[in-house]
Length: 221
Image 1 (cartoon, helix red, strand yellow):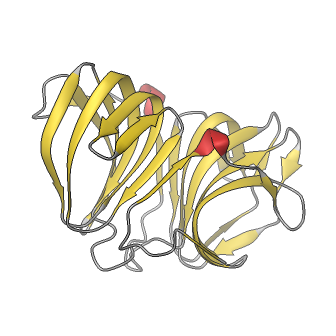
Image 2 (image 1 turned 90 degrees about the vertical axis):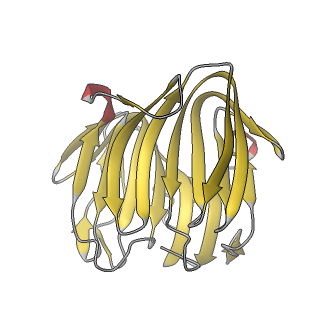
Image 3 (image 1 turned 180 degrees about the horizontal axis):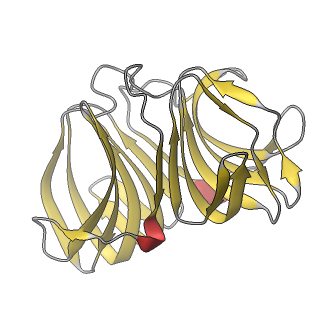
């Protein structure tokens, strides 16, 4: 399966408008954002766990990154409430479940093979730091080589001029609304910009968003 699989092209999705699709074993539902492969695939998705559900034990041969958006995600290593960011490195394995149900934003097989650190960040307990842009604060989640992952909060109205993404950029709008010269991105919008992109970003209402940059520098993470 190929869905927004060309990392050299701009891609955008309004996730609230996408259909939910059951996994083959009908344990979870997915809204697919990008995908290159079948069940073992480089993929970016929203994944919904119904209350009391579990997913079969599996290994992440090329790594897994996720952000818990709603509810509590669990595995044998702990419970991860909404706002928790997790990186399970290449070669890791777990048996995920959710007692009350949860929604996660997940990226599979998009790690640098040398990035072997497991990361868990509860963003609700961490302090955001000012950036060079007034009204914009950032919470650092992970850095490795050219890859940089953050949660940002932006006060409206604001315009961030001439942003340059030599290694590409990927957004998930968690609340509020962003816009650029190509469109508007309300809460739930996902946007991927290829390497070499330039952007003028406008904050039309106070916004919180996930931003990952530098991971598309050579056509993949």
